[in-house]
Image (cartoon, rainbow, N blue to C red; front, top):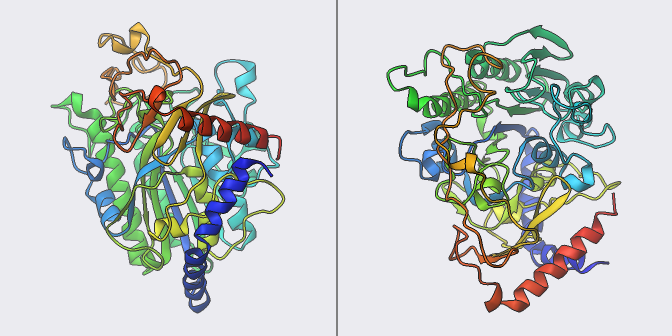
Length: 472
């Protein structure tokens, strides 16, 4: 057994007692009532500082803030990759990108190689796990795990699908319902509203069985679009805020649908993001942005509400990641994770209840390259981090895919803001710096020379993790 897995096992055993009593409580609740429903809402490119409950002061997100007040807000929640498809595949399978095979984004309009990228049919998603357990399942929104038929959501455990199969800046921008194109081209002003209406319809028609709703929004991925109700033409620079306010409205409508059916408290309700923000968003003071390994690219908001298991108004600062959702959600619903494959995520029920602070190291990558490892308060870069091009700091640059109608039909269309969303990275003398995130969340002070043993230990854990990737 590798040191990585031995250390991980020891950590899990240390919290076994608390986890055991958590499990007794949860399974008691399941035995005495219905299995909980699950609603997993995923924003696209929403930054750590884009919600008022995470410090945003330019606008308010009251519905999402209310979820945080009634549940748990995580301050140190990570994604394994700072961009789209690999992050989503890892979350839905509980498996690291280099293990599940999705390390790049599928593109329908670039290269032949990108056109055939997708989540292998042999991978088991949350959709399949819940479907096989008798849940009704739906995916509503952006899929981005392959746009060929054998990659469709309906081939990965979802009874129904409604949405765009990839990012909203890729052509053709069209909506599929199940496996049939029903709208082409799409007026993107209508996307958030249409997705929300479909989500409510799914909730209202799921009366005879528990359900799993995976709700990955298109926004605030560029090009930004918002309905007329939320667009403020007198302040066009506030388009990003308009988009976030409409997302908050969507969360409120989903909550209202659950309340109307009297199933809100028997529903595990989650809100998070797939990676850090693009230009115009906010990292909340963290360094970097989407597509970078800095904290601003990989640390995202995470809120979970489930009063049957978790306390209200709770804030946890234990480093956890999106891969944990797979085993945790299954455990909360009384289901077993697959035993025929290695799951990189861990059941964090005890962590969320505040009964444990144990978690295995968190590793991030970019394409096939391992970038960082975080263990407790320490974060070590294993590969030279990405810095800035001249374009990054040019406020006059206009992304050619955003304006002039090439990828969007909306009155609100305008060039994407080039305001850098986080602290601008500086170059370090040491190309693989070490940071103590408990006192330096902005990653400004490289402490490699002061902590050689920490660096050595983290490198050993990194090598053990890499060795484990041979196991499927």
